Every structure is written in C-alpha cells, then in structure tokens.
Amino acid sequence: MKIRELTCDVLIVGAGIAGVSAAISASRKGAKTILIEKNSYPGGTAIDCRLQQLCGLYPKNTGIAAEIISGLKKLNPKNKFIRLGKLEVFSFQPENLTNVLRQLTQKEKNLQIYYNATITEVKNTGQSIISLKMITPRQKFKFTPKAVIDASGEGCIIKLSKAASLLAPKTRRQLAGFTFQVCKLRDSSGLLTLKVPYYLTLAAKQKEISPYLRFTNFTYLLRKNSGIIKLNLPAQSYLGQENTTKKYALLIHRHLQKVLPEFKNSQIQWLTKEVHERQGRCLWGKQILTEKDILSAKKFPHAIAKGYWPIEFWHPQKGQQIKYLKTNQFYEIPLECLKSKNIINLFATGRCISVTPMALASTRVMGTCIYLGEAAGKAAALLSQQIRR
Image (cartoon, rainbow, N blue to C red; front, side, top):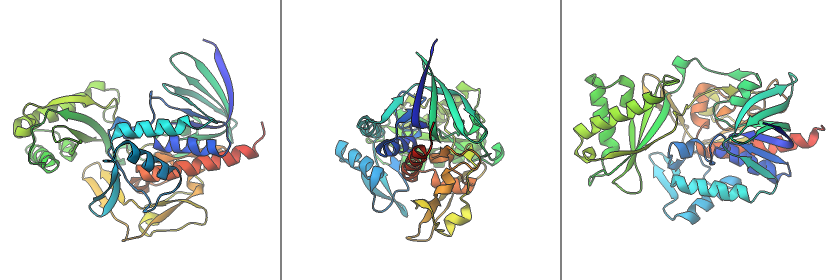
C-alpha cells in the first residue's frame, strides 16, 4: 500500500468535542488543519456513552460554545438549560450533537477530516514533532505538520512522541465508565434514578454482585420506557477482556429484572463499544493545574479558559466524591497547561491537558473541553505561522 504524504499547519488527533473545537478554531485562524478520528463520526465519548448534559459552561457563552448550543436548540426545542442540584447544565439529545458538530466542521474551508483513522507512529527530533504516520481501511498517510494537538482523551500522541507526561498508578485512577441502553421499561413512577442505585447497593452489601457495581446509575431518555445504565469500573480492569463488560451488563440487567417490576420485560438495546477512562495519560506541561488552584478559584496571567464545574472524582473504593467551588466563583486555566514542557510544537486539550488527577476531575467536563479546544486551536495556529519548513 503506497503512503500518501501531506503537509499541514495544524494536525489534531481526536474528534471529540475538544478536538472538533480545536479544529474549527485553528481553521478560522487561517491554518491548514487536519483532524483525525478513530471512529466514523465526531463527538467521541459524548456520543459513545450517550451523554445528555453539557456541563461546565459559562453563564454567558460566546465563540464555539455558543454556536454548539445554538445549533442544538435549533435541532430540538427540548435541548435547553436545566438546573441540576447546585449547578446549571445544558440538556441535549446525543444524536443532535453529532449533527451539529458535522455541520460546523463542514463549513470550514481550511479543515480536512479523516475518520476511521489511527496514528501508528510519531517521529520527533527530541524537541519537535516532525512527522506522523496514519492508517485508514483504504490508505496509509504520512503527515508533516507544524503543530500538533493531542485531543485523543487517552494521550496517544503524548505517549507515541515520548513527551513528558503525567500518569497516576492504576489503583489511584478514577473509575472508568461503561454504558448500555435498556428499552421496553414499564415505568409510571419516574423513580428509577433512585431505585436502580438503591437496589444495586443492597445487592453489593449482600455480596450478590461485585462491590464496585454499586456505583451504577440510571438516566431516563426522552421517554420513560427507555434509559441509560452506566457502570463504573476500576481503571483498565477490563483490558483484553472484550466480553467482560458485556457480562457485567447482563448481570446488572438480570438482577434489575428480578427485583424491579419496571425492568421485568425490558431488553438491552445496545452497549458502548468500549469502556471510557475518566483519567488517563496527561501532558506534563509548562504548568500543572492543581486541586488547590481550583478550590481557591485561582486566576492566572495567561488564562485561556474559566472553570466552573466542581471536582467530581470517581474514587476506586468510595465512588463519586464532589468538592464544590464557593458560590459564584470560578478558576482559570493558563495557556501553559496546554503546552508541552519538552516538545515545542505539541499541545494538548480536553482530558489530556497538564493537570493533577483531582484537578482533572473538574476540567474534563464537556463545557470546559470546548473552551480548552478553542484555545488550543488558536495557540497551535499562531505557532504554525511562526514556523518555517
């Protein structure tokens, strides 16, 4: 298979919400931009896990975030801001998000997207990435970019380029998420969000199911006859065991059929393709954002985004742990958290930025990732204008 060689100003890996925002931003700054995605669609974890809430948004949005929200509202009037406890989130339908991201990217003349693509090799001089190799089902490519953004979520470019990185031990990482959808529920009470975790916690205490399965939660879809069940699993406990997650889903579903009448005739409609890590490899940047920075609402001279979301850490033994900022407070994220400390043309965005594990538990939400993506795209485009090849 012949290798096709291409040059570009900015190359972005990962078309989740952060990667798409980075690609749009870089393109609008005049940079010849290439976006690479392993799936056949944009949206990443938000789509794979059927997420239905955009968290961490500013009270007033501008830029790409405002465009995404506007697009979602136009597609469906049920896509709107709602109150969730102490916080406000934007509720949306997952399929609408895919459509909006496609519409936005298709408008960009400087942007080219490759789906079903995998980066296989990254070459650098020790200080700068000089080329990347990619394979698709039909062709192989070699890219020569001026700047690279890792928006993969798992830090694949950080790893392949041997950039300095931050990676917590497996036993201390947040629980990972695995999702499946149930249909044909018979529910008139609307209380399954409470009943599902209650009965699974009870089953775990009685040792009928594994202890960590007590962290499972339930969310309704548009109609009360279907919903999303999310399991929270120990980090990487499922690797190399494709059927393990299916086994967990079947176990949970059968138990719920036994103890809850609403589930008696229900069926599993689909399962996510993979388990999604909340915490993986992060860039070791010129600066590292910490838990203290977040809870003290710290401000920075070169801030590129604001963070509003609490620290929502999924503890391996204790489950969901939340630490809130003070009312009406926000923290800032400096540009230095997006820049590699040892590879001058490598940036990170989304879940890959330079943060401690506890700080990541706040910055990883979608709203913040949009802002981080937009900032990373601008920074990479600016650097590409300064580099001659």
